[in-house]
Length: 306
Image: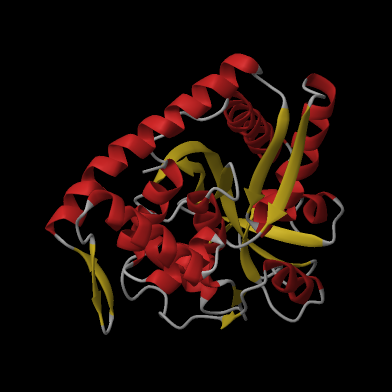
């Protein structure tokens, strides 16, 4: 019995399928089947029941799976501890950022690491939170940073708060001239909106039921497309300050804060049950500093109303 067999068996039980487990492990299904057959021969028991709709563990398989989780966690802890002792801040760090955070964090983190920890290479991937969660769980990313949506959070991930970000009603210069100092739910029904699904959900969760129609605004999954549509003056939107700050400072866009204030909470996610590497902890702390700086900039340099 070796660690690879234990990892493969655990993946099959979690996925309930040889084919899905093979895809998760990035190996061929025949090779995966041979591993399990060898494990069953060595132990002298049947570990999995092969059913028409997948597989499930036998009594012996269930016991092996339970004990394997403790072993795998301990193995990960050993590996992390050895790596940390050998070299605290070296190697490659794989970071995932949601599209709305790339402009605020990517360049900043790259520059800070190049100056303070040049022996660490930071690789940054941009993707939607649903993909970042999956890739962190699979170990393809060391951590991901994105907007927190607790009802969707993967239980296999560990969540650390890194800051908050003010949400604004945003439009091209001149399009919000008829709106007062602050945006309200009633105002939202009087402007043409285009929203990403995540920010629409955040908006609806912040108001009383019935204040804003559930189908408010047009929808697109691309926040970059939303920004371009708004900049052309075709629609307004609800976007985070960190994403539009450069356009506000340049006078390309104008904005109104919500009353009461509407904020999104930002989190860093890592795999649960393992100690984060030193470089991961540094990224989290740097991100907190950067987001605090941007929040202070927002408080002290409110753009003039159009």
